[in-house]
Image (cartoon, rainbow, N blue to C red; front, side):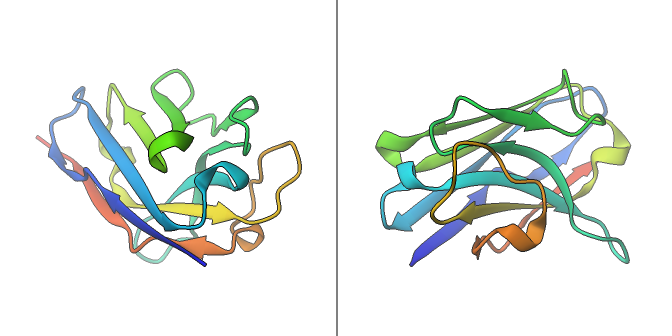
Length: 126
């Protein structure tokens, strides 16, 4: 079992930056593929960024490419999402997710993940 806890959300003006963190407890982080998803009311939970267990393969949704950076530090069991040039349409609840027994790539479907954090609200507004 692994428990995931997100932090770092909040209110930011358009063009601003935030860094989300996802801290894991339980088993070692290094053997999990990870991802960030986001969800707004009445909509599906969508992939934002994903990273393979080794960190070598990374995916970004087109809407965040060039603005967001996903990374994970296996030593302290933490994953990050650096979000720059934020836009109002980035407003959502952001969730981190972990998948056990991954292959060498990343995973884009929320049903492929075994563990979820509780979510952290990001609001981009002036």
